[in-house]
Length: 114
Length: 110
Image 1 (cartoon, rainbow over the protein chains, first blue to last red):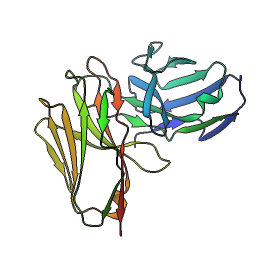
Image 2 (image 1 turned 45 degrees about the vertical axis):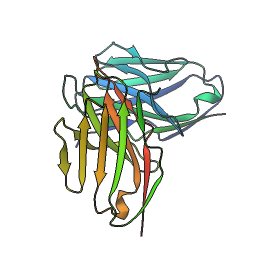
Image 3 (image 1 turned 60 degrees about the vertical axis):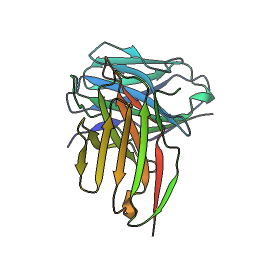
């Protein structure tokens, strides 16, 4: 059974803290993604990676960075957490290539910044 | 204009009803299309991919009209368990990115 695992379901952090969200997939997928989901705004792409040590900005990268040192792991970093980064964060992975490649999601991390 | 737009919903329908969701996308070079389902407080999961010729999976039928840049999902004989948010997803042209619509919420009522 395919699996994308996020390190935490719920996190509460203080403004200004550095926050790490970890994501691991066991499907040997090339592509990995970080989204945030907010009511009324849907899922918005923060960053994605199509290979180890490669990263590309998504639609809303400001205030975030990422790290992909190993194929199976993709980390999202909030350099200095702010209250407007309170959100549900979803990691996903997919195979590379053309065609109908499905994205598999982790269970999500609900982050609250106080 | 958003890259992927959907009926705002919510749709409240009785059990057994047929319900249709619409989705439009703005990038004519988009290559792959999907419907995902998201239950409350859960992650999105693939419901079905959408093929150019249209496809059916049990009570679910998906259609794609490339000329109109339009995707639809038809659910027949609605069940209580179909209550969820349905997300239209487009694979962004030239890459492997998935662009999600805002979702349409469906509530099937007894």
